[in-house]
Amino acid sequence: MSSIIRSWLFVPGDSEKKLAKGRGNAADALILDLEDSVADDRQEVARGLTREFLAANADRGRQELWVRINPLSHEFSLPDLAAIMPGRPDGIVLPKADSAADVNRLGDFLSALEVREGIAAGATRIFCVATETAASLLGFESYLNGVTSRLTAMTWGAEDLAAALGAAGNRHPRTGEYDDPFRLARTLCLSAARAIDAQAVGTVNVNYRDEGALREDCARDMNSGFVGKMAIHPAQSEVINRAFTPSDEAVAHAKRVVATFEENPGLGTIGIDGKMYDMPHLKQARQLLVMAEKLAARDAAAGA
Image 1: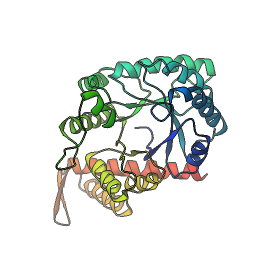
Image 2: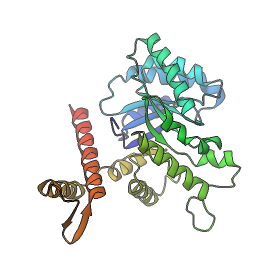
Image 3: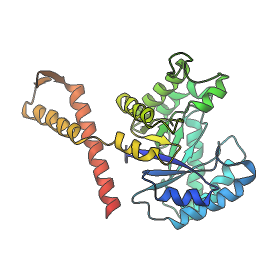
Image 4: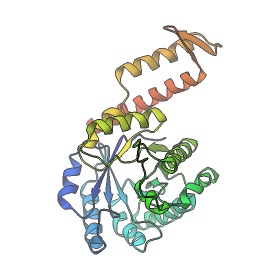
């Protein structure tokens, strides 16, 4: 996982006002959207504004700029790419992918466009929305059998998947928790991302007025192993950033776990404050410290 992005905020690509406001938002990355938030008759406008916004904001030290194109199965996808690549986006968000084959196909398109625009080969990364079609739930093994190194992040989606499965909703009517097909999608996405060392990103929380629910959702995602979350409202970014930044207490504890193991070489199990720790705990502690170091480096670079 080369870099960590905690918050990914969607911004409609056809709104000059919202694009400008997004640049001042706390989100680590903006997703300039050419898909769901843009009407068909606004596509050309959105492409033009997005390209101009990318070109006018070449400094991405604090906030990266990604673009969600239309699905590769849609006639809009190639015109999207051709129009926005002169702006040198940090990456492309690919919706409704069925498998790694779609990601690799996008990678081929990007290779050609990078040559056209004089962009370094492989510089444009890919963030895949991996569970929006019925076929996608059957294609996760493909990511383990050869996917482009451009794929650096994966997320899952529950809204489009519900429509693809013909479901009346994605949550259990009594408990309010995600129903089984959507829990499966979440688990498969997390597992595949971790298996290929891509960032596993939590899906959106559509109830943007309920900050408490968002905090709980973030805590649930972080506990499961996700790193970061998508946002659909500007107010969600700061909540997400706080949730996915290790606390000082967590960092101090992780350092203590690592130090204790290093002071006792050859031991597979140690006791700290009456609790037993073994190799999985050591691995978790080291992962948390790596995450904290990367976020600190990111903040330092942004402030330079």
